[in-house]
Amino acid sequence: MENLGANIFPIVVVVLAVLLVVVVGVLTVGKGGGSRAWMIGGIIVLALLALGFGLWSYREWPTDVVVPVDEAPADAVVEMGDDSRFNPAQITIAVGDTVEWINPGRTFSHTVTADPRLANAPDIVEIPPGAEPFDSGRIPPGESYRHTFDVPGVYVYLCQTHTDEGMVGTVIVE
Ligand SMILES: [Cu+2]
Image 1 (cartoon, protein in one colour):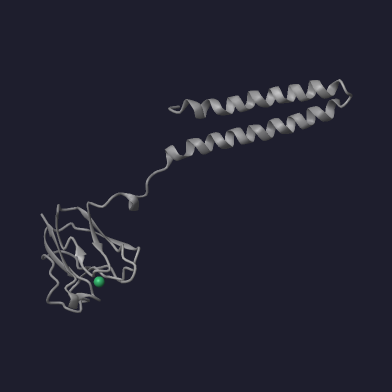
Image 2 (cartoon, rainbow, N blue to C red):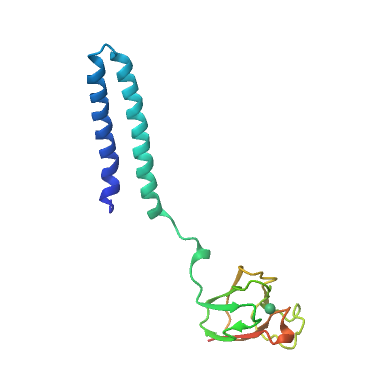
């Protein structure tokens, strides 16, 4: 009921439709076209009613939309571009925060790998005791990956394909 225009709209449509039928009926009854004209008028009324309420519900609809959980902004964003760097290379977040890694590049895929069992350079990867290792898999241009950090400590992760170029990042969870 916050949008007065949207609520009045169907009433306006109905009033206009009734006026239209009366005008068409009055004009044609005199010429002997009686019941047929009223039938056409009735169909027009029903069509306009349907249109009016259709538009009405359409206009109301967007206010009821619930933003999907995935659309909630992350607490921190790290870019992985064609320069093969994590940018920023080091971030500090709070326990429970979600980090999103995005690939805004055009050419290279990257990974966010904090799992010593999967990393091609396991000695570089570091996760705090009690934390679950994680690995994004391949993130092509335009794609992204999210991870929520529930265990405090220092996480050192790498990109599997660009480790040799120094594509290593750090997340400090306080
Ligand atoms: Cu990479």
